[in-house]
Length: 265
Image (cartoon, rainbow, N blue to C red):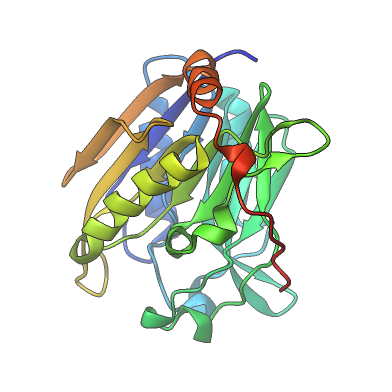
């Protein structure tokens, strides 16, 4: 398995303005000056974290989905982030994993943020999405999911003898007022799951005047902070080292001792 080059984009989103956000991310991706393979965008990157899906939701044929498809093909990259999607009369906070050839995977946010009433507007998912690229397994999650470690727990797959995934990702709109939890939990998820952890957050005030400090981060499998950025927009590209990941897992092989369990619902 070779190394993997990833790009994290921390942006100040235009509140409930799909066209403006798509133009902004188009410019940001165009500005990446080096070759990259996977680009990570925040949660609800085309609208901000809005509780108005009745006005903002698009189908899987909408402009935001089509933009992801076009941009991934144009730049020969994978693009991922979540959108407000309407499907079968239901609203979903759906992460799209878009490949350059137009094929894609989806993950519907499992843990809806009741404190903001997300559960009153959206329907939660019940299936994980672990995507594959260049032999890397990437476990994709959304924001509030980070508070629930059982959902993200990495375990040895019996058939392969290897961990279920190598990179744990959270795309988010996580406010500054709770950024201690964001920073602490992201590092904990990396350490306990012996994986790289990526948290891609927005920055700036949203339409409810809630400030987001960003704190977009990349953590290595030992919990070391490779990258962390607060209070400003930024684009960060980094090469994930397979050698580093294998070294940590070989020297401290504790995943094999993890508790066995089954999530029933």
